Length: 399
Ligand SMILES: [Zn+2]
Image (cartoon, rainbow, N blue to C red; front, top):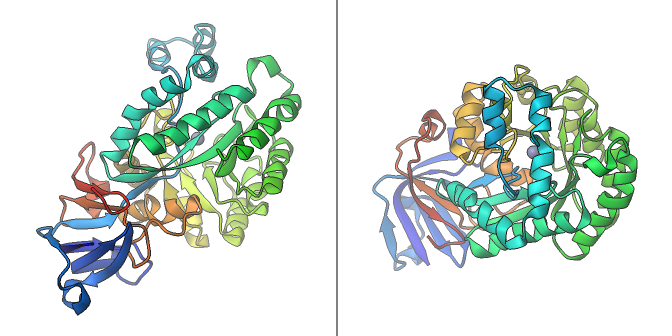
């Protein structure tokens, strides 16, 4: 039992007040849950003898949720980054072993221990900024054994660090070299059996895919979604990142938790998302790294009432980013989201994108996952670049 007093609460509850702000607030924590939150003068008498910590006016927000990462992988792509900047062509990079193939090769060669120990420093960078929930995808194995190993490594991260891990099976991420031009056979022989095995082992919280010309078409993705449906697992999708193939509308038809990237999303897809309640996960780190120019349709999503989340998309190729605060800043600067939308997108809406009903806001009954910041107003979190004002992170009631 504990009271955190003399604080400003950005509850992030939908309200007429920006950020659901409560000045001179207090929050009571008990057994990993929020017991009470509100103005300190309204604190019920029954809490009077609880130990109280004075936070000196600091801001408390819900802990941050990174709802889209590929943080478990082997190797890195720094050399490829360097080659490109030295003027190498796409082909020369590929011939030097670059691209996603190099990550697949390095991931297949890594043991579960190596995958975990490589990922932990990246995870720690997120936790140092107040993150308490991380989604982690498979998708660099592209064979049954390595897809399962990635998911086991992801689950282990949740045991080795004070963080809640949610896993997504992403067998339909890319077609491996040995199945070149045989994407349907890959789905039949590797992706679907790996999904079923991983689900049987309790390794899968959601099922994801990459619907794109360079990956899988909507018909192939739909076969993966059908298997997810049989297994009782929710779906999400990388869609409309480089072209509009209608993946988002397909995902919405399957009641997807989220559709992610969305730079090329059109009006039909937006209407489908609004109808199904699918969250739009926007990934400014990939937009920045790939030097994209096509912006996601933020104003149209806003007009349609589609909730927008922000994530790092941490991965070795298109977004080697381990700062959710920087992703929030980029969402504002590059995508013209407001600082309030960015913070909601990294808390309440990010939790929604993972199907988590007990995280992302400060209210009685929610998990006591909180971030305490050395800032006086919440806009400062998205405003600063490369600065971490975290005072303390609380995970399940303990700091
Ligand atoms: Zn991704």
